[in-house]
Each structure stands twice: as C-alpha cells, then as structure tokens.
Image (cartoon, rainbow, N blue to C red):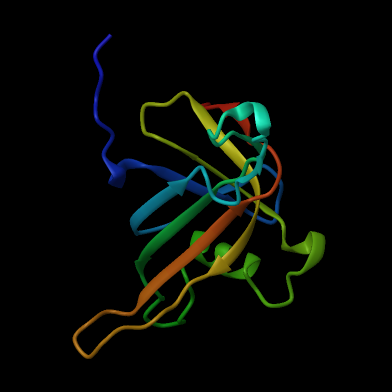
Length: 153
C-alpha cells in the first residue's frame, strides 16, 4: 500500500447546523491544527518501588481543533459565510451550560471515516496591522468521546 503525505489545505472541517445531521463546511481556512493532547490529565503513580523513576497514568483524554483564516463578509449585507456564522453563533456569549455544546466533524480527503466531536466553541483574536487583512480564528474543544461515521456520497 502506498503512503501519501496529507496536504493540510485539503483537510475537511464541517460544523453541524441547527438542524441535527445537517453539516456546513467551514469556509476559506488557512490553518487547521488538531491537538490530540489538549486537556489531558495525568496522575503520578511513582512509589518506593519505582526506584527513582517517574511513573504516570493518563486519567483524562482531551483534544482541540484550532481554525484560522481571514475574516470574510458579504459585500452588500455584511453576512458571514454560513459555516463561519454557525461557529460564531456557537461561540456566542449567551451559549453557556449545555447550550454551549455543538458538533463538528473532520477528516482528511481520502479518509472514509469522519471524526465527530461534541464540543465547545471559542473565538480567537481578530485584527491586524496597517497592511494586513483582518484575521479570524476559533478554538473548538472536544467534550466527551470521539465518535465516527462513514463518509457517504
């Protein structure tokens, strides 16, 4: 079997719309970073029999996904593209408690399986200098276990 490197620009990231199992692509991304060790917690299990060697066990797994791009809006209405609008809505200041949870799914282009997270959404800093375009970013933090689904269509 041939092995291929994955182009970061080909990663597919979608956010669930307000209708369950309806997915919106998150448009015009420039950077997608999955951090599978985010929010990981360990416990020191070293004892006298460890002979001075540190020992640990993982007690909690976590993960996050950081998305970055340039800010986008419709020329005439100022509306955001649908996927980004959904991310921003889920990151809204009124979204607390169970209302702060949404879902995303992502995969590499040749993968036959989506990775799906229940997650929370936080917007990052937006702005830039004199000769920059305005930046846009969001951090999506997994809440609970990862589930999967076959890619259809």
